[in-house]
Image 1: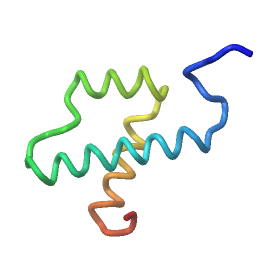
Image 2: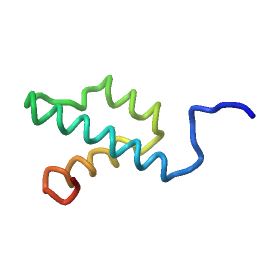
Image 3: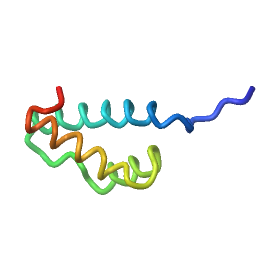
Image 4: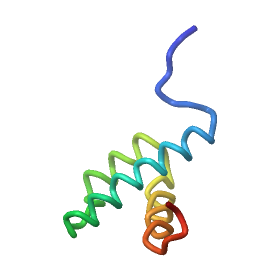
Length: 69
């Protein structure tokens, strides 16, 4: 059995992206600084694939609106 960093299970990616959004949202709340820098966006796209930044931004907006805890 070989180990792969990428998972074909989309539910894992959803949980990981939500966790990333929680970290970024908490950082933004604590510092008030922009957290989605160009370097961070490139990292997220490499790690989670195309569209990851859009999905993470959506999770962050849900957190801001109080719909996602």
